[in-house]
Length: 144
Image 1 (cartoon, rainbow, N blue to C red):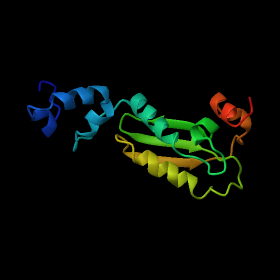
Image 2: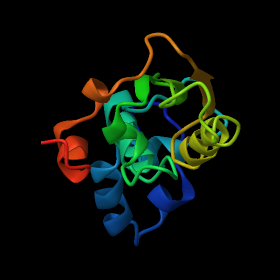
Image 3: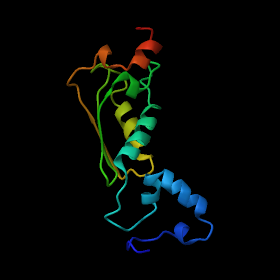
């Protein structure tokens, strides 16, 4: 290779055409295969979209809407190195899942390919209110 980047075993094999096509469709996957380099970069926007998909699988057990659509995630930052910061809240400071929901978010985000480090911060400012829900959440809950 002329760019002096390490080549994975999959890239060296003659049967890697399908893998190369998959890697082109998933820049995080291609870069996560490069190991031992401190300058491996990923596409933070693509990784952010994967994380959002995962956040759609996390629910407050008392509400049949995921935390993303509820508007419980205030900030989601992703770096080119795969470091992720999630600032989130809960529907109430007295929420019974206050001790379990943030660790669930951390575990699910950590499981996304391309994520290196995860930090989840729980905040109460601004206080969550129903106006923070997406239109889809309001429809599902019968508020529209």
